[in-house]
Image (cartoon, rainbow, N blue to C red; front, side):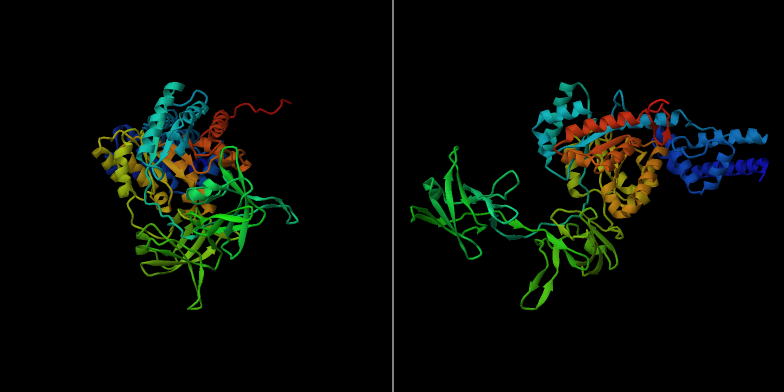
Amino acid sequence: MTTDRLIERTLAATRDLRDRALAFEAEHRTELDSIEPRFRESARNLLHYLSVRQQDIRTLQQDLQSLGLSSLGVLESHVLASLNAVIGVIEKLAGDESGRTPVSAVDFRTGPLLLRDHARLLLGPTRRMRSVRIMVTMPAEAAHDEELIVGLLRAGMDVMRINCAHDDADVWRRMAGNLRKAERVVGRRCRIQTDLAGPKLRTGPLGPLGHFIVVKPTRDSMGRVTAPAEILVSTGSAAPATPRRRSTLPLPPDLVAQMADGDVLRVADLRGKVRELDVATQPDGTCVCRCARTLYVEQWAECALLREGETILQGKVGAMAGVVVPIPLRPGDILSLTRDNVPGAPAALEPQAGTVRPAHVHCTLPAAFEHARAGHRVWLDDGKIGGTVIANDGSRIDVSITHTPPAGARLRAEKGINFPDTELGLSALTPKDLEDLRTIVEFADMVALSFLRTPLDVEALEDHLHALGAGQLGIVLKIENAAAFRNLPRILLASLRSPPVGVMVARGDLAVEIGFERLSEVQEEILWLCEAAHVPVIWATQVLEGLAKGGAPTRAEVSDAVMSSRAECVMLNKGPRIVETVAFLADILGRMEEHHDKRMALLRRLSVSEW
């Protein structure tokens, strides 16, 4: 093909793209008229972008490159200006400047500026060395630990996130109050985002296997006892042991009062054995019992205190916390989701019937029992467990397990459930959310809407905020299901009627709904659409999780943190090393800002040694 024919073809293709974009805008004139005037040009730009991306322009991109021209690969924030610029150059090459150039209100300078202004309006001002903000999810300790919040602010936190799915209104108020105190100490303002819980599907509670404790001595690799089991004696109910807390054995107060060094506590083991434990007092006045053999003790078990071989007092072990065992699952197992809130339990043999009763657990959302159908997929615990609905009688959904880790899975209470194929017909706002709104408007700067699916969910939240006299609050749209992703263009247009607005890419639930193999592709599309609408994006879910919780990030987590620099804000979850994690992320974001602006490489001088 000659250069003249290439120029002619490319000019026709680019003009057609522009004409289609303007026609698409005209088709949506009524929707544009309802947009907040300050955000109308952003809505126009979004429509232009949607029109361009409805075409496959890969051949055009190659033709532009062949002519030595800039491609259309980074046109998101200034679509019409990019088309005008490329067409203008091709017209000069073709000697054809007869076409009329439509005026673009958003150009190469104002497009990025609009996005930055909208981000500042929602998320607050930027830091001196970085423009990407850092959001941090608050742990419960933030309600009483003012120094934690001071440390987070100094490390680089720009937005405090309060998750209304946890704690209560009093705790949320104290978190916000502590932030305002910390701001005065540090001398920097910080925004507050409150996340509404939304209609999250979860597993219900699991029933206890029994009320007992198990204590084992320490043994070497040959099974020899190297240290006896040690149990702390108490007069209250026993709490479960943790790595930092020994098991406790609740005993009658009169029996504990008689205990002295050298005594022996004889206890009935629930396996029909009898165990004798040596009593020793501690410097703080407490007593411990030591045993060189494994001990299973249940509540109300018979016990006796012996001194020099003689029984001096008898009694019974006190109340104990229930021992809850997760439900083990493997491919081929059946899990029943129950509408009634009965405690969950693993599969069990029914002796009289000679059959196995499937494992069962409560599903917290009644709508699932009204809409789930055979063949619909079900995912549990953030996608760790997958299955397919095989039956639903309105009170019980039977799921055939198809996916677990190689060693199987263990399902616990309060784990998420996703029905990606099921249209649940839910409003994103639950009665709890509406009640919580009355509290959080007192101190929040923005409200995050969880599990929205359509523009109607956005409009409902706007209406409730205005009714509470809080229409000035920002709204963050959490994209965490397949329906919200499919409807994102219309959701963005609806949200621009009442800005400021932002989008959170909730990659955990979203990956479960659309498939982990599609997550990278989908998060790219969300970033592109939001940039075209000049809507700031919050990059969320498990960013630097290994560092926040365990003190060391993985290479994949660091790469993910680098990718997050393309958003306007990055969210971190809570963890014992969260202050260190904020500082680490702030350093990464500051460094990457010198190299990239969104997807465009800035080509700063390389840091490798000079040749």
